[in-house]
Length: 355
Ligand code: ZN
Image (cartoon, rainbow, N blue to C red; front, side, top):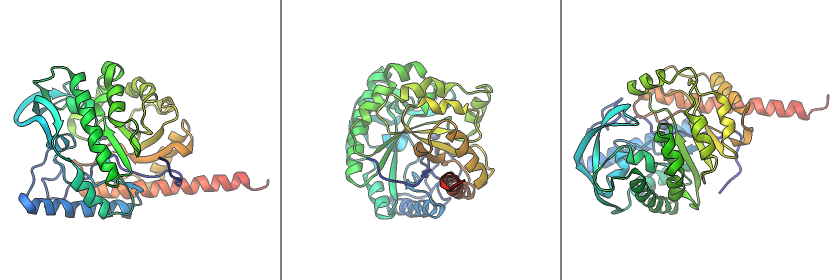
């Protein structure tokens, strides 16, 4: 499903910071401030703000900012049979990069009821923009759980792929324009990506009638990730290993990190004919990008990818950031894309005018 768009359409990786009256600020697993119907109302008010701020910044494809989820993975799992949140096991995730208290898979997985339907219905009713829903991908889900039932990451991942597929079909029927699966685990487990990761991604998405995207990044701007990135060397080679595999998948778009990173930009050319949602906003720094810096990152991407395939996005979710910083960065994203569009139209005019 493709519609005509201006050059460099904009979107966000997914999450935005939650207001301090909704949840503890600047935390990855924040505690809610309220409960019951008051919590639902506060989540909806926060969603209104997240949508409004994105519109104000000129973001074309918006999300609900994940205002109703405590965490991008655990929010999805809360509605699934076979996952027991009362049995948490502390384990190292993302190849032991950090410790997390992971719910346990205790039996066969099944979707008990719609998971994000009500949030999507609310968001759909409160914006006229194109709407994207972000959902954790199968490999990232199994990497954020403790599995006491399947004892096979691959088998559990395919069980989740079937659940994601059911959920996505319903959300699309409810008015969602784009589905993005978040797979930061793809940047960690290369052999598994090749063995079954792409197949599980495709099993979740193939044939769904929406813009289909996958987000693969170097994680939130939290200390554990910043330390990890320091150890990755001068040139990060992870994307070079997985992009050729993603080029063979069914997704329309790959969302990736570029701004302020050590990603060698030539890897962008390895994604075949996919659209690229290029991260032009660094979420690991509180420094607000200028529109010129954003336009320069877009120009860098354009050395390797034709302009029609370029979208502009944030490097990753902004959930753990300061709110004022995150919203200033959103505005920089919108302004930078507008500037790049203006540059492109000047170039086009010069090319078409007689010498
Ligand atoms: Zn990310």
